[in-house]
Amino acid sequence: MAGQEAVRRTAGTIENDGYYEQEWRINEHAGTHVDAPAHFTAGGRTAPELQPSELVTPAVVIGIAVRAARNSDAVVTVDDIRAFERQYGRIPDDAAVLMYSGWGAKVSDPDAYRGTDAAGTLHFPGFGQDACEWLLRHRRIRSLGVDTLSIDPGNSATFDTHLILTGADRYGLENLANLDRIPRNGATIFVGLIPYERGSGGQARVLATW
Image (cartoon, rainbow, N blue to C red; front, top):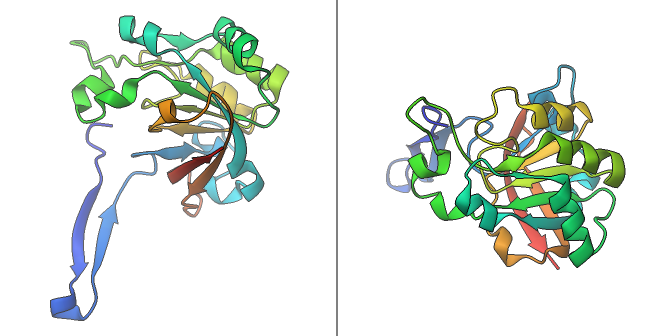
């Protein structure tokens, strides 16, 4: 978010110190990252408490890019999920359900990526709370992921999807890239989470294979 950009400095050079290193100051929720349950749920698990078995999961990609191009407040709905399953098959249990909105094309333009209007409200796609509840109840999902700043749509002031997901002891993935390059169903993702001590989340390198 604005004002939370990562800052780095050179802390050592080969010429002066015999080795090269950098020092970083970074918010846990900058860049591609995980939202641990503790991020929105009091007493929820922190980043180090997420187990490797939870961070290697099957993945499906639900595309809403056409609708998002017309409406920056678009959300993934239960109808989108049902349409996905008719075409690509059932979402497996313990899957990461990922939203592809095409928003990654805006990442080099922070204002466009945030979609901030004159009143300061953000506008970008996310998951609707009904879709989140349906996936938890009927498909026992492990996580939700998005190619935007938040699993909630940008115009949300109540963060309902975050509250529902983390309240169910599940985690979110935000600012994902290249979701258009992986299969809609049949991939496995590996979430290389930095387990910051008592972290509400942390940066992650997310890789996919199929």
